Structure formats: C-alpha cells, structure tokens
Amino acid sequence: MDRDEESIVAEVVERELLLMSPAVRSSRALVDQLLDPEFVEVGASGRRWDRRSMLSGIPVMQGAADDGPQYVASGMTGAVLAPGIVHLTFETVLDGRRARRSSIWRKSDDATGWRMYYHHATPVPDA
Image (cartoon, helix red, strand yellow):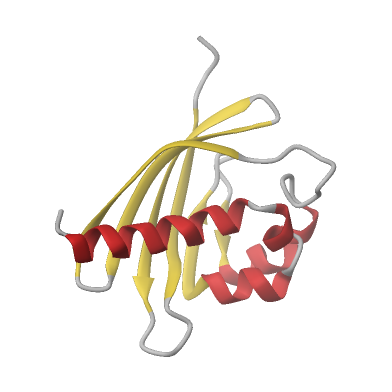
C-alpha cells in the first residue's frame, strides 16, 4: 500500500471509530453525516438495517451512552479496493459480546467525504 492509500485508509478508520463513539452514536445528525444515502447493514443479530431505520434507532442502541457499554475495536485493517472505495475489517467487543465486522466506505462527490455504504457484523461464539 502506498502513502496515499495509507492516508485514505487512516481517514476511513477514523470515521469508523467515530461511529462507535457514544458522542456520535447518541446524535442522529452526526451519524447522518457518516452514512451513505444508500447505506445497508446486516447486524450481528441478523437484522437488516437501511439508512432510515438506523438513523431512527441509533440514539437508543447500545454504545450510545457514556455510562453504558461501549464498543472496543481491535485488529482494524483496511484496503483501497478502487478509487473512492475502502474496505475495513476488524473485531469488536460490546458488553462481553464479540463480533467480526466488515465495512465498505465510499467517497462522496460532495463535501461530506467518506461515508459508510455497507456494514456487516457476525457474532463470534464463546470458545
């Protein structure tokens, strides 16, 4: 990976981490800035989320309160798949539950920059 790609991946990683922070998760307006208009997620529960359902539910989901369980991410890596497309993979722990995650981010033509286009989470069973 060249320096430009490293810089792009670092920017996308920063945005991914923002989406896990209580300060952002508790704000529909902030989440709105980070989700692509065509956003889709398949959550660890198996539920399919679109942008509208995610925006309406996010402020009350786990990880949105400063005094509640929060996401802890590890092993985050990324690759530039094509110009304007980045794929991240990592693991999280939330309230003792582990999940393997994959996100696809795409760069918007407007000033919003990188936005999450697709996210998938798979629960990791206890050993």
